[in-house]
Image 1 (cartoon, one colour):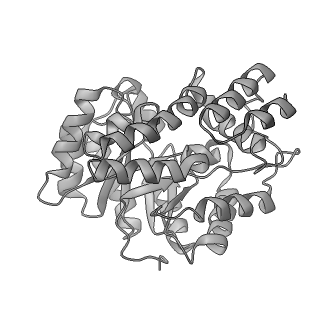
Image 2 (image 1 turned 120 degrees about the vertical axis):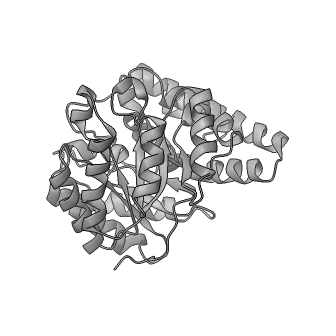
Length: 318
């Protein structure tokens, strides 16, 4: 049974990072410390593991089980845990869903299968989600990729998912086009059984939230969950002046984290945690590689601009 059996995905949901030792094994002690740090932020509604931020593509099934177990033991008594379902095929996706449910997850974040880059139909998408839904009663969150990747779902498909998969409760919307994002929010949250839209558009989070998202799910929360909570609350309170003040602090970090190549976003967040003294090393698994000293310097400057690191600290660290 999930630790939070009535959990409905909404609000601010950080996706945590996964520290590694120099030999590329999971650094259990640092992961526990990181989980405790993120979970201590007042106002977050859950945490996410086994997703992009934890480098799930390079983790074995057993390592994903370990990640869930450590998260459950460390913070599972305080917060719901959302477990990613990252698989190329539907049979494996269902197996991951069953393992996550058995491990105490409270919801599942369903990634689109890789073969959809070659084309998809609504029937394929529905078959994938039905197999997962048949494997567990946990609430499902569909990860909506940009349509340009081939893995994003057309709006009619999303509406059918909402109608035909009763356990679909939310989507994590990575729609990069503002008009499409707004239509998605209005359509899904306006259904007779509303499907919450959680923003993952961290490079333009204020704009996304103002359009009406009922939450956000982002790897940036591994570092700036407190700012995300304050921003979300300010938008919900229609306090645009406060929201803009908070966004002015988030902006330099978003600019640094989500630079090209985009795939290094969580790599950069690890380096930021090292600069803040919250992580001892920023090791990533191949094919990712350590970023350059010049880029680390830019991250340090962004932390100073955001008010998270003092100028004196910047001078000493340089």
